[in-house]
Length: 99
Ligand SMILES: C[C@H](O)[C@H](O)[C@H]1CNC2=NC(N)=NC(=O)C2=N1
Image (cartoon, rainbow, N blue to C red):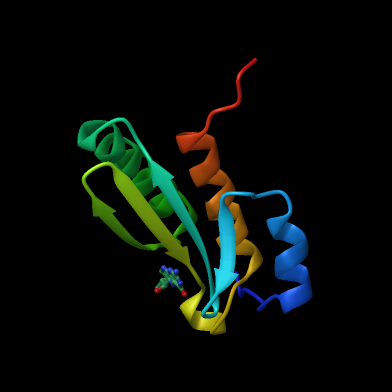
């Protein structure tokens, strides 16, 4: 489905629900810290399946227990609702809700 680039106001509004994420350089960025490399890489594997399911892929970097993720939609040359969908899926993996 064609994704429409969000305005800066729309991005900032959506980011209120995602406190771990920031907007700059035409992308949204999150940084996550884990206990160790194994936990970090395990989360990355789970995120990779979500990316495939959404057909949307991050620019990301891992250094030991730190994962940094940048999301933008190349085809729209900016941030779209699909980036937020993936950011929310990532949140659910790295910070599952307690019940
Ligand atoms: C052909 C395929 O649908 C496209 O290349 C997809 C794949 N993953 C993608 N990922 C991201 N982040 N942006 C895109 O525009 C994009 N396009």
